[in-house]
Image (tube, rainbow, N blue to C red; front, top):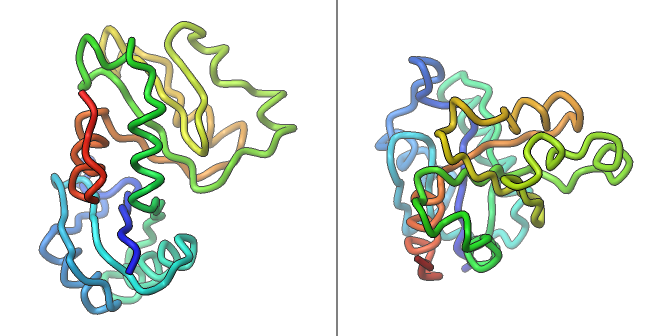
Length: 183
């Protein structure tokens, strides 16, 4: 069975859309997933699923949360191999001085090329933003609050579902998925 990483968008932030990680683990087990582990309280889960389509897995999680908890929560799912790719493609110059200041913005789908050409987020901070495969790396040397809001930019201009995690979380999720981590 494939191993997946699920990233739930916008839960347990500012008291909104509260989901205990024990409840998330139970919910994922009821959907039929196994070997479930969660990381932190921000909606990160690693699990095995028989379904080999990450999009269907994400949809099943969203439906289960809506049906069980009455919450509309978007979910982005990556395979263990895709998480390894995120780790391997990370610009090392960003990580070398502190993974807590590197954000990885995960996109549910690849951006429309026309929208990307018209609204390139790298223009917000050319030395600090790199595009990847359905993701955007953002170095935030002065912290996330001082950095351009790439997530809002993407939601507004690309009309895309996006959620961000810091590098330390991404590396840990890759490790939990069995793909290891890179310093």
